[in-house]
Image (tube, rainbow over the protein chains, first blue to last red):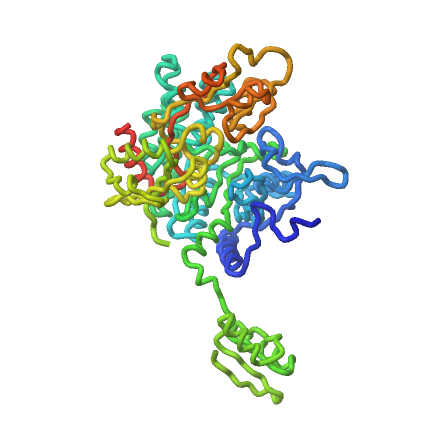
Length: 401
Length: 210
């Protein structure tokens, strides 16, 4: 018995009409921005070998990947990420292309979400990668483009900046078990303040570790406007952090010259589960969507992992999520009815007239219905305001609906 | 879409009572919350806040999807359900603990055989025994878990223990504590950024009145 032939799998959906229009609108706006900024488009396969996403630097949890096998019984996955395949591409087919390379893509990723969570398993992304180049300049360009991309999606946006290097440096200096290190990272990422306060309370920590404890407790609280970076100096001391905070301040300062200052946020507790990020990471938020609409960051070890030593930075926008917000805020403008419907006894006449109308910039639909009455009914149902009837002498009469 | 009010989801029942008490202590007018009838969305007069009442796991779901900005939910549900949200404060009330309990006088860890554990919280149980490196069979029970070891379905149970009276009356005893539990304040990861000032103001008031 076929039981699933009328359904789409959980986490996927059919997109209809204005949903498609809104999605295409967003990806066209973004593509326009990226192409206009000199980025070249790439498309990577939807199917990849499991091995591409498995390793220390590229450690996608296997339970989150859709898997299948190829003809030789090798394990394959539906692409769960675009940055890793693009790094593979840069290290293989684009091996002889001089860096920096600026690439953009418009493709779906797939992931297995917990059952009944209402999250999307199929996510359409539009994003960029800057491979190579001077890292500070590339980071700045990526941030500016990210802000511009968000602005094209929705005026009410925020771009938020953090840095994976801060936590990494603290952990490199702090001596503790791997388990505690992993847990601490999770607690900071989820802003689990009670747990951090408990584990790193003054009673549980030796005098010499006090500065680490203070920093771990402070990181998830250090979010807000650019001024957060000044406050962070109280908790993050030493040459490494002085430099790090100064460069973040420079980056945010520069950004505020291009992007309204109130759109820029900082969160030093921002950590990504993706192991490949090494430097700045950033997220974009739009009002009306409960998850980040954009995410990205610097990954300096990923290309090296494929055998080409170079740093890179990139980001992706969740196109469908943004499109849904856009529809919620003003769906009407994506609903488009044809301007004219053309009916004739003689199909040749009808289509000839349609072509003329289309050439003149109208949206003209050819009626494939048998009678003019049926055509009138159809026009009314679809909100088409004008009916053109072409008679046997190719004479045209227009009717208003 | 107009900017909606700040929405707080409360777990119905005991946590709700305590949380409403807390909101009252802050100085909010909670008459609407006290005389709610069957309504599920309630407002606090003169404040830009709406209160939503939901079952524990749903509080997490609403907050995770961003349709509610803040939520008050037990750590038990946070541990069992998981999800993407920020856990920003321990509210201190609704205190109890997860514990492993067995029939009085038996040793859960004795022998080589794989043990069976009955629970309403399979994820909490799995994580606990995985961390200890012990293989166990987990059976999910919907009602009174205490019954399972008594009728011989399981060697032990992992459940919420408050006073231990139910265990005692059924001839069971706590063998090990698994984790402490109390009510938590959780926040949507985007709301806290987009409405940072307002949320921090409320969180501060809550923390001052605990």
